[in-house]
Amino acid sequence: MEISITVRKFGVGLAALGSLALLVPQPASASLCFTSGKVYVQQKVYDKAAYFLECARKGEPENVDVLSLLAFARAQQRQYVSAGGAFQLAIEAAKKKNDTKRVQDLERNRLAVNAQLFNSGIKALSGAKTVEVPAEGGSALSAYTVPPAPQAAVTDTTVFPPFTGASRLEEAAYDFVLASYVDPTSVEAYQNLTYVMTQLNRTDDAIRAASRGLEVKPDDQRLHQNLRAAVMGRAVSLYNDGKYAESIEAFRQAKKQDPDPASAPLYQVRIADAWYKLCEPPTKGESAAKGESGTKTPEQVAACDSAAAGYSAVLGEAAASDSLKQNALYNAAVIMANQGKSKEAIALLDKGGALYTKNKEIWSLNGQLKYQAEDYKGAVVTLRHALELDPQDAANHQFLFLSLNKTGEKDTSVAEYTIYKALSQGTKKDPKVWVDSADNRLGAGNQLKTVLKTEGYPEEVYTYSEENKTFETWFFWSKGKSFTFMEGQIFSKGAFPPKKSS
Image (tube, rainbow, N blue to C red):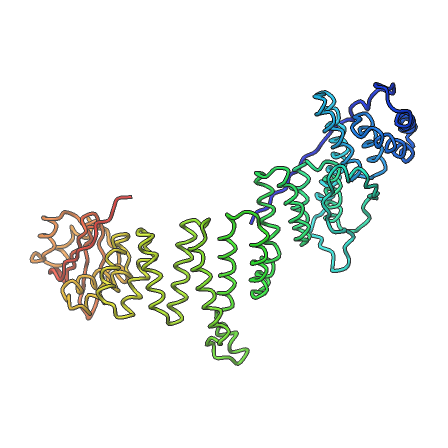
């Protein structure tokens, strides 16, 4: 499954941080704190600036100037959760006042801080030439924690020092985490964070990041795509490593964690695929090496039953496409048949055939299983429908010949046999060259000329030999006719559904 990453370089300068003059009368304590805070910002003494600006914020919680300077001071100290909360509160306060220009200034200021972190993450990611997944216990990256609401975030003075770990992937993740703290509305940060956490096999962190991003933008396709990759990542890895039993449980958990109901059928198919891997008997080489017979163990038989049930369950998935349902139905029927459960397979294929009247594979398998189950009349009806879908399918002509032979329709059976032989074992000839040379090959008494006169040139010609006799079959696919000659004389005439022009 493809996963997406956003690469975007930001280049933004800080907008004006506001005049040093007091704009409105304030209580003495708030006014004093604000003035002190501004002075310390000018002096670049950001810890003291933040102290006094927090004092001012408590007195005037919706003062845009206070919040703007507080966000700046917190960012300078790498207190990114608090900075993000202050920026968000300032923007909300400016919106309440319908101060569009101030909102734009604040968003530019926030983007400037966010861009430094985001670009640092892109740089680290580009430097990760290989997938650097730290060994267990060797990670320098803490679990991803979604920041609290702005009112709580603004008081979180956690300091985030520069990353010191060895993994460039972890460094990228760290920077994207900080970018998401500064601007919790930045979809790009969540997209990239989900991608990197997935690469680090940190499924829970990736899921949290994607889910948080989807709260911001529920219809973001990259986030949906990355979330799906995240929840499936561990399960797919287990499956690819041959740990099928473990992958089944992982796929089940992934199915629960994926918020998109349209993904449910994909998980169901992967679960059934894993069961089928457990169902397969060892190869001859594996069996010989282990001293096994190659037959299925009771555990493998049970796995086969689970695989068939798993594929069958896809039919009940409302979000499954018709294509997925048809493939799953066919797979389930094949497994049932291989388990000796032909009746169950036929019942499933009858259901599938009623739903998908144009699926040749379903109808072909159904007809062949009905012949093997000695339902010869049912096989004839089913195989004839399959031949309506593809009159050139040699296997269906073979099983129709066998079925007709059992129902006593000898002439039709012989015609089907010659069609099967021609298509499966015959040598294809150039129709016009072959027909025009009939007298030279067979003498003037051949019956090919009669057919040529009434039907015209065939669309295809095949020749084959049997019991020291030479046969040739002429196919008029568009007319639904065939003529088989034995050494120049008509041996049989076949009829089948005319082939529809593509």
